[in-house]
Image (cartoon, rainbow, N blue to C red; front, side, top):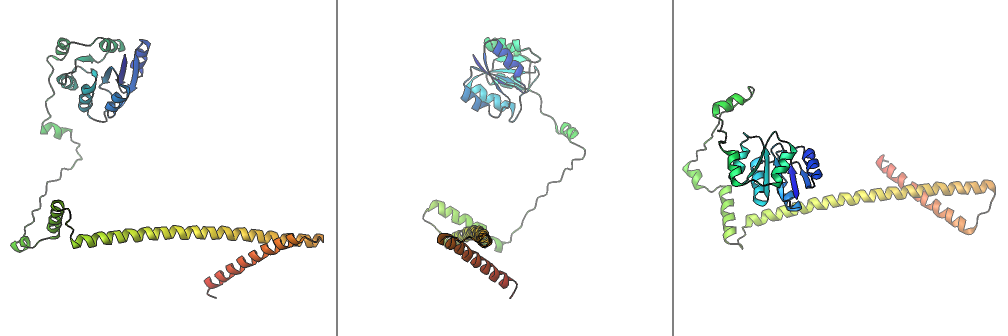
Length: 276
């Protein structure tokens, strides 16, 4: 038998069920209970009242009882017991209870007579009065009075159509006549589209400019490094009195030209920035 156990700490029940030869699946919060039922398709759900209450226990039990047999583990005076009985739940285990009692109830479903005997004499707790709620309210709580503001309009204001009434009328006409499109709405939509286009264009231009700046900086750094390498290589060859080949000379001269261009361009920019 496959049993889905919903409890705050389902390890003890799960271990006991596994040792007894049953397939136990643990679950802790009740908000995803229906998803777990659809996924694992259990034969029964052991719903412990101490499970994490993400949604109301009553809502979780109602949804579970519609799909699968529910074994409710709760206190005898819990208001959840008569509620579950009204939904058709027949299997109850009252706490404190041993895992053996829960397993016994899972293996042996209760009859309607057993369920009636279990919940006989139980009543739902009466709603708290305003005085009791006031006692539970913290002393530092400040209750603000309700303030209602009534806006009086003159006959002239009522006769003049406001922007809200015009908008409501246009929306009503748009729903009644799909082809209806007011000039004001057309201008508003065009302005919104133009503004959105300009924002996207500015954002794209910013990204493109940033990318170009980074690329130029990287290329400049590469040429500067290669130019320094070329001047250094030329100096080493002169010191060693080694005559380079034609290809080597052309390579060195190319690097020197690139280095001189980058340095002259950088000098021009610095001169402009300095106001020269």
